[in-house]
Amino acid sequence: MSHAEFEKGYFGQFGGSFVPPALQEVLDYLAEQFERYKEDPDFQNEYVYYLKEYIGRENPLTFARNLTEKLNGAKIYLKREDLNHTGAHKINNVIGQILLAKRMGVKRVIAETGAGQHGVATATACAMFNMDCTIYMGAEDTRRQALNVFRMELLGAKVVAVSKGQGRLKEAVDEALNDLVANYKNTFYLLGSAVGPHPFPTMVKHFQSVISEESKRQILEKEGRLPDAVIACTGGGSNAIGAFAHYLHEEKVRLIGVEPDQAATLTHGVPAVIHGFKCLVLLDEEGNPQPTYSIAAGLDYPGVGPEHSFLKESGRAEYYTVTNEEVLEAFQVLSKTEGILPALESSHAIAYACKLAPTMNKDQIIIVNLSGRGDKDVEQVFHMLKK
Image (tube, rainbow, N blue to C red):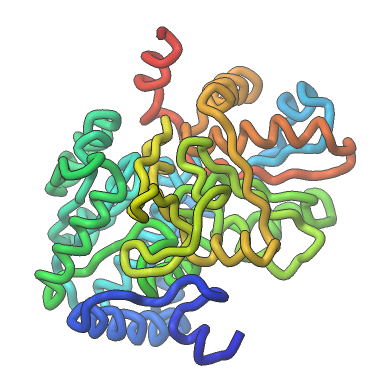
């Protein structure tokens, strides 16, 4: 891949920036500021300070002894993003981007959210840094994740329910991009996943790569070697790209992304442009993004990050699907064996680990990225199980 191509935010044929000229100027300026500050020692020190003192990193790499014994195969370790402040991996990226917004002198922040965890993290950081905050969320998701909507409002954010189309994550991104085009002079779009036009996928990966930076060091301390596989759920792909980042060049480590079978972008998607970038997209017969469904609102997206699209096409990472039934089962299994309630998103990764571990030897190692905790999903799971 040529240096010039990479400069524009391409991963093979995927990525890039397909946006109106006015927005392109904003994104070019954002890319320039990101490149300038990410290597800046003051910026780095401030980021590390908040990771430690506010988010509570580093979080543990927990050996899931009971689950390992139950499955009678590979050792399973859980990277505990569920223990972060606000309950998920999303805050890693939010703190990084909000510190960038602060340096750019911006006072108004907008974001999109599916399950609400990115919205909550953004509202949290805006409260702390005294910034005006507007969150776009699909109307259907505001119903499914009503508790997170209330959390965002408690934190001082304005939550805008988007009822167009399916009223889900895709529509929330549409509205946030419209807002940015209209208000780019005074607004910072804090994108929550490794999607969107350049520089967003690169920025999000940069701030989420702390996950694999830690897990790699931790597994070497605990086991004296690298894992055989790293498993993470993939919707837009931010927790997965963070969990994979420091293993990308370790060719012996299998990188496995797990998607909902009804939103299987990496399994069935074709190259297309969505939300200003090129990736694998689920398209209907007319060539429009097709309706997706997942019991996990955070995975309900018809596209996926460009780097995941590239990893799939190049064969460096593998992507599989699990069913809603398998996800609900995994949610309960981890709760009962380890006393940890995983988010429904993360339960996708657990579900696949439960299939993979028994096929491996007992001296082999799997790291599962436990991207978030399940408090937000308990009521939803309660109703689904009652059915």
